[in-house]
Image (cartoon, rainbow, N blue to C red; front, side, top):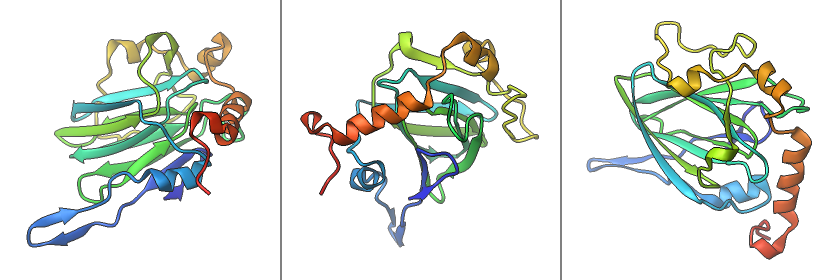
Length: 207
């Protein structure tokens, strides 16, 4: 696990074992995440997304609490996975980090509650799988326009972005801030601290 430049986001590169039969790897190891986060991550939902080349999904985030932490991998093809710090008051507010996920290096990305997430399909077809800490709840899900010049995400210049109607109508980061829909950095930190120190929910860090 390698921390990205945004607090609460990591890139996970597995050790791949190969022989004449194929390959094997440990795709998800919750104990590693628990050591990094200070609490065990509950998985409430698993999503599978199939996209054609150029499809751009995001930037999506959820209200905190409970937010929606995500563990993202690309099972087939390749995607450019992007983490965006939408937490108002964060030292890295409005900063983004991009990681290529594909079916060769089998890298994954983890982002904690309160961070924004987006990805673009780089191959003719790309299948992304992501584990979520909370189920989808429309009332607390929000988005920021992935092509917002204020964010300036460097999407591949040779691809024409294909957005859903919902993502195309999403506000800019500044509009979302003024509307009060962005999570606060202090709230996210407080929620993480609660998970670290509340043994009643069974999520305290391993000894």
